[in-house]
Image 1: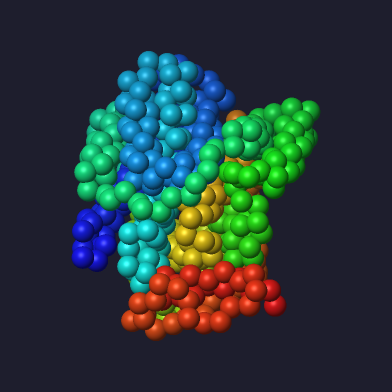
Image 2: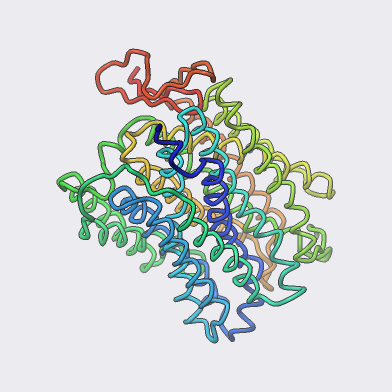
Length: 493
């Protein structure tokens, strides 16, 4: 009996993976509009409450590649369930948190759940028919990005109708259902990568990520040229260099440095960093712009809920585009779809920067960014999954997601510094600060498009061909896999 006939149908597996990833994605952004409410409820200062976000980003940055590696070693389904359980425990603790310290601890635990994305990619590659992999990976990637947008949209109604604690109760319910379904329905992967975790490399990875994200998150309040920020950035560079040296010499590297130098991988990771900068900064600062009162000379005086509605096209179109991105990749190639995404995103962000006096202009702009982000995230995931050997899927896709998170932290910090320039004594930002900030984000999309052209050529094959290995000849050193109707080769010309 063929292997796939004895296992859960891949469509049911996809439904379970999508539920888990969606819950994780919502937790990425649900708390952003509610930080002022959480600050008052937990009697915290404005500076201290930002750790509700920072602690989560730090934890997710550290645990995402580790969980991906553990999944490759001991079973992707097993670690997917573990990641969901961590999300559930963290959500429960956050919902009940009596103090800011407990809330921060809860967010650190939730960060372990960052592993759901690379583990979902790995399960898809192991369990799905080869011709379905590209579309499924693209849709999961779109769901992860869309969740961040929907979190901004849903936060207002939830807080208004219930309380900020339900920002954690609702995802807890989703995660609990997903964990049980994954345990019962998702088949365990037969693929294994022998080895062990290099804990020295893990500690060094944690060290440079903590130093970098702490520096960029605190730079707006401490000052970009302050001694603590410069010291943390210097420490990040030094620890990062040591980490690379340790990984290159390790028999069991956490991140395979040879894999990271594959042209398809490093170019796509640079694009992911730039998209992280643009997306998270836009989602973090556009609501505040929309909520500004008429006295500020800009904005619409919108409520949290109303500003979320203006951002709804971004989330909806990311999802819709994710549904068709696989077919577009089959027809035009993932590289061209990615470049198209950078162009559309650039136009959307440029529109926000230069035309933001009417509601319809905001709707048009957020629609364009939704289309652009959806195209790009789906294409990036497809390129990464197909550019590396099967046993490195979890680590490679985990690092790509991780780099996007790092980009988000950088983007939010840089945007905060730009918006603060020219602010009134009361602290109210000037319109020029927002305009310049969104122009910088648009520039990041131009740069992402330029880097996208460096991604190796992607040769298309007919969508009906069910190949398990590429039939095209490859030169020495090239990597190729067939999935979703594409062959990705790491060419050197």
